[in-house]
Image (cartoon, rainbow, N blue to C red):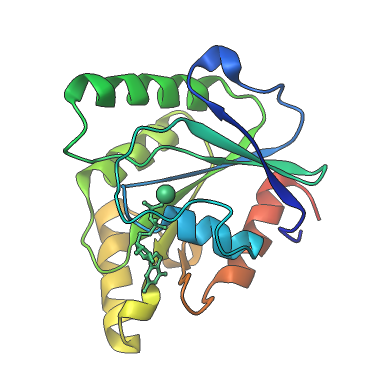
Length: 195
Ligand SMILES: Nc1nc2c(ncn2[C@@H]2O[C@H](COP(=O)(O)OP(=O)(O)O)[C@@H](O)[C@H]2O)c(=O)[nH]1
Ligand SMILES: [Mg+2]
């Protein structure tokens, strides 16, 4: 599956606005500023289809992108930004939770983590929640270009241990030099069942 022919479809702020589940769907999740937009742009080979932000945590909905006639890609709001009020965080969380629980066409949630940081509680929580709900997920450790080979493997192993992830189940990625892009394409294609 090649991630070309991509266009923005709509931004969803309430569950009623969800588009018909016409295509297999891949959702992208991660803490604010982790590099989620950059990863999506790299995947689709566009510089700025998904806005790369210097100012994380801006209120946003679930952003749907349509990949030709084959799939929807969904940019979930970044989590864990302290400047957003608790009430707002709860509202986001309930929208995301009901989306993830109810979306029949959802094939996979890509959980993006910064390879430089240790296991973060919010990521651990999301991963165990996805496991409990039998939702496929794919851990991706991004910004891998920021560490040298040795450090990269050390950090990756620490994240694996922290989240109970097997090393062959996750992908090391860099939006800067394209590391892991082909592998990500391949794994996502297998999740969607599209060749
Ligand atoms: N070196 C490096 N920087 C990255 C990478 N991915 C994202 N960034 C930078 O990290 C910051 C946040 O990226 P963004 O994609 O907006 O994160 P988001 O908030 O998760 O969508 C930006 O300054 C990006 O240029 C990467 O793979 N390598
Ligand atoms: Mg973003």
